Length: 546
Image (cartoon, rainbow, N blue to C red; front, top):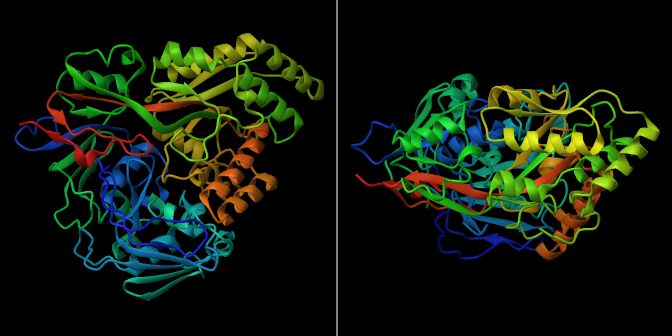
């Protein structure tokens, strides 16, 4: 990610004026036979949903949306915030009122202007539950959000807290303090949309019109997504290449074989079979750096024996303490992951190794047996314990490993459950149809503990409105998140985030496993490889030697 001059930064709570120059990351790709142009082919997976930013919460679609759209702000490699389409974001009234000024001259790839209406209409569309957008909860602190979550809501109903003052000014009134608002304003949920998106949403999702560093060309389902450099892009993420071709694979091994064979330029998904060798492979360039991604697995509260009650919590804790994270990291990840100590990643300021209750993340088979026995005294165990995963990703080996630990420690039938594609897997997760535990994890949308905690475990993000796919709902945790958002400083907010994490460590709505490094490999012709604050590749920086 390319860092630009920062005129002023966000200070949580007080009057905040962001007068920042834009910065960010994008992705690029190319057809393998396009040797006569600087187009980069990169690993991709089939997006789970049409390409609406507000409904994109997984990696396959996220990589694509990141490259196509530009929001109010973007982030540098250290998580710093920089304006993109925003000229300023000013806060008052203890972070319950924001005024957003936009830069002039931005336009979409269909030639229509990017205005205040482009943002407000997109936010209203995403927040309205009738539109079934997975990122609706990102707007939960704006006035009128609760009204848009009612079962009989009018699909055209809007957030009462949003007002378009003029083409370049948005007035935002919140129902509660939200010091993280300017930070999350660069996430997918907050991207602008042109009028064509609302006139024909089905068509738009297959052929998006955008305002980012790249212009959409085509989506051949299960084959490729192509885009070219956007000549009208006015931000600071200007591509150094001519375009992208996200080649869609169902197996990281196939992608890696194509990379070694010269039929793919870049991948940031290293298969398990190559983790021991990719850094010493002389035919490639290899990259392994600290990142912001977390790996977990979720045990939804609707499974028998796993309700949000004493029995369920005892069983979750027992399962967590059955797993030797350190050994799995060494044997399977080979130095590309570290055992989790909390629910965050090291680049996030609230990250801590000292949280009360984090012993549940440490391997302790005798304690695990004891907790399991206590749960059995409440209700005897029956059946099997399964963990589902998508077979077109890299989860197979580690899921099987932790199932073996659970089986051997607790003396129960534990097994992995492969699902053929990410699309099938995520469809079941998003619709709440999972009948077992399932692999999960997070790559951050914006550099704040809010993104890892509120968007994954707050009640406002449950019931299909956000990333809380296990439908975890606890008032005590929600109250801590509200206090964090109301805090006058990052330091004070982090204390509340950490107290919220200590509640999560008791309930374990998801079980933290590892923090993943940013790993990637490219052909020798590729240069400019860099990573953003979350460990994602900065595709705009890639170039290819001709």
